[in-house]
Image (cartoon, rainbow, N blue to C red; front, side):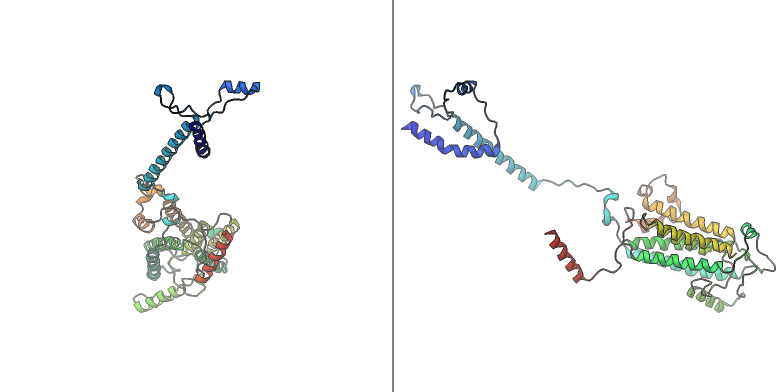
Length: 396
């Protein structure tokens, strides 16, 4: 009777043992060689789960557990050990201290490019003040220009080989207006327009401030006999103020009839605007738009060449204007795009006078500004909500 009960108990334990074996995948014990030989000879082998002798065996010895019982106890021990490990790992994961990983500046993405429109406003006021100050300096310098009969035009090698073409300066101003218009449209569709705008305003203000210095300290005679200069006002302060306002309202262009004064020769302001517009157009547009770059370069180069063909500036005015514009643009963007240079002890570019202004404008710009475009006006909230619903439906 006891043996039958033991056989029944071992049968009850067997399903539980099979489930545990499937879950934990324990190593299967090797089959004895004797049993394998017996099967090969055709003799039936004894089942491994044969019942143990009854508990009341002779000698008072404790019963030896059968193989299923030993495997079940071992598996249950492994199961409990597994549960303990899982509970400990969950507790550690719940209460552990997280490791803080610092992300390099180049990998911070859009978070490292804050707009800071108030800085753009400061740069705009700086450029506006310098442009108004330039008109004041032109008015002052105009009173010092020597008369053509007293001081004839200086010899210029370019003028020796090329005669003057009267309509060439009109081509220069038309090309300049087209380039500025293209750059304005492109800037409107740029994503990081605040950062780019303050760079543009700062460079415009700085280059025209240099121009104020050069044309004030050295006043050159007119480059050609064809030039008609407005009469000098001397001590008429009211008349000078009206001239300043007229020059500002007309943008300093001959097309608008606002530029009737002489003396603003070294260096050429038209060269600055033609070159600077092209540099910004190329820098903040996609590299695959090579046809657009070539078109803008032709407008800029032909406009600069027409300044000399029209004999409106000396060759030195154009050369100095080109070098001042390109070098200032490249120095500034080298500092802006190469972040290792900002605090490097051997960075000689940081010795420029505008280095503190640069640090103020670019302090929170920790990565190179990518060329990304976006709509200047955000769509209505209802359109955005419908777009999210459509995208959500597609994802499902």
